[in-house]
Image (cartoon, rainbow, N blue to C red; front, top):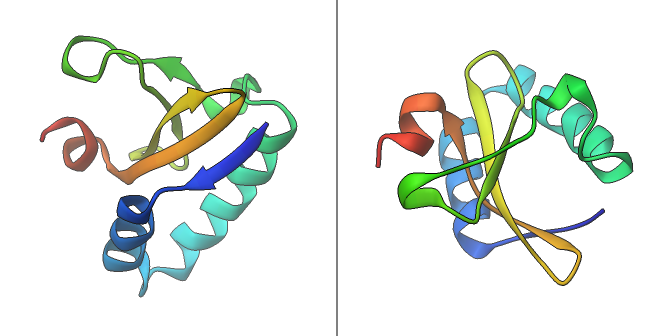
Length: 89
């Protein structure tokens, strides 16, 4: 799967995780898995509903999620953060 980072995603990622090298490392590991197989069970990838209908999310850590949508076989990452940060908006 090809991945693109939206401008919003890059800003959020830098703001929330610039001083958290362990989370950054886990994100890189999960990103590699996602590129090879977005449905790898380790990712706990799932479709979202309600106000996030059309988007998907996968787990980076127990509480950190990446939110994305797919358009023309490209996954566009739009948000990353804790469960409350990404779903509590």
